[in-house]
Length: 360
Image 1: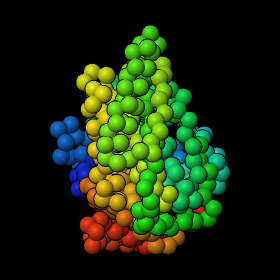
Image 2: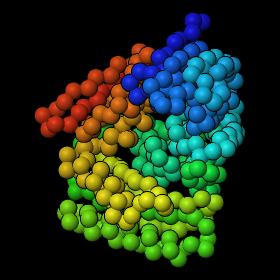
Image 3: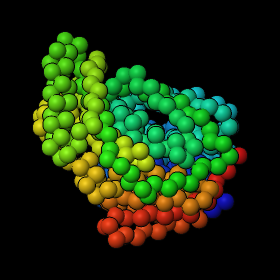
Image 4: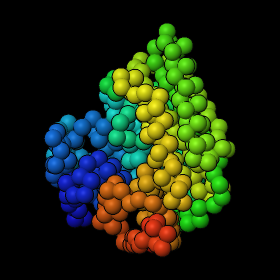
């Protein structure tokens, strides 16, 4: 079988290429060579967060690898047959490597197993340049259900930069034969908005953190009220962890769409206003444009649209570089065909004719 060579420096030129390439390689049993990994970055090569995801998928398909070490700019990944028994995997990054990004690699593989899977991941639950775990649970997982994907994530412990030490247990049920195509094209009605705000840190700071989460909740309600949104509920949480950090996730439910936004709370530099403005402003952009999904969700859907059995259609305000990268990788590995066109309302329509990958 010929080895597929992937240029790791194209488009987004980072972890997105790695995560999707190893998932496709495993599912389609195609050996790959990824070169020029993160070549355009000031610190090129593989980092702990990339290695953690690679290690998970390697275990899932008994892959033979070379170059899977820190700072390596080339990775060869030769999958064997996908394991069909229960996955009961454990990966510990020893850093604040993003657990949500590990899920991005592992979930597409786990859903095509014959049995339920349990994957324990240790690292960062809420870190920069990655979705937060609450965003994954409250926004991505409900939308994944439209494909027929059923999974849950239990957050046992939060982890933040630089120590990590968070822990999440992901459980995944296999799909029934095929992934279903999705259609998210109708914005729906005036949304109800739910917010989830938490701060976690040393227990002796709980009183201070309780005040911060309450202040964020109040600020979010006030800002959204001023923009004409009044059906708002905010859940708050204060927890214990080795490091300190927090997150705000907003989810607008229009009955036909879920639109999310999020922002991290950095104990060193964030303020009540900064986290509120960041999350609310992103959400308001999508709501005012009547986007059917948010841009950060879209790039997470591409691999499932490519694998689904039939035509998927979604409507989104913005096509990010991550989304373009995901489409590029999907078309490199499969015969899935994507098209993007701008509609009269200024939004983008993304259509994909999926390949109908079938459970073995």
